[in-house]
Image (cartoon, rainbow, N blue to C red; front, side, top):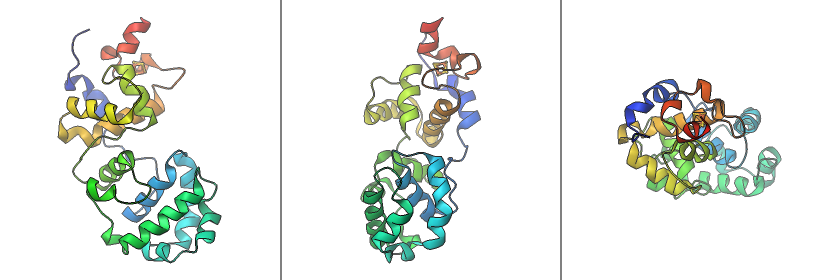
Length: 208
Ligand code: SF4
């Protein structure tokens, strides 16, 4: 198979690159809180509890003053919910105000509950300059299937993707591969016949 070129992914980036993340946030404060809550949980679950959460804690100052037991009453059913409640209160106390929430990768990683994937999502959704590429569980499936990366370690997959895509497409590339996995390249039944990258996909080539 010929080496892959960024141009081969034009249709994919066009289709999904700028699509908003499925988390239904309406501010950076809400975005960061929801990204933390969504770790190892579903976006749908977090969207469902968000109205109650943000009615009780409309901004970071309110969250900083939260009683842990009350917060657990709202987020406790998320995966690892008790720890997430502690992280959120700690994060709110560190930041102090919504405007003080960090924007750069280095500073986001200092916050409790935020790893590279979450930081990349926050940077992308905030419209800030990319410092990496979102690698969620969908990208861990799609990138190796296509042949853009190998293995299952998010860090090494992200590194490969950062080498392949030009920096000005990083914010688009990760979520495009994620949406591809959510809608088309499903775990058991990939819909290769309607896939925008089928012509350059290693897995599709093997199945022929
Ligand atoms: S061609 Fe098939 S296996 Fe390859 S990315 Fe598309 S849906 Fe997945």
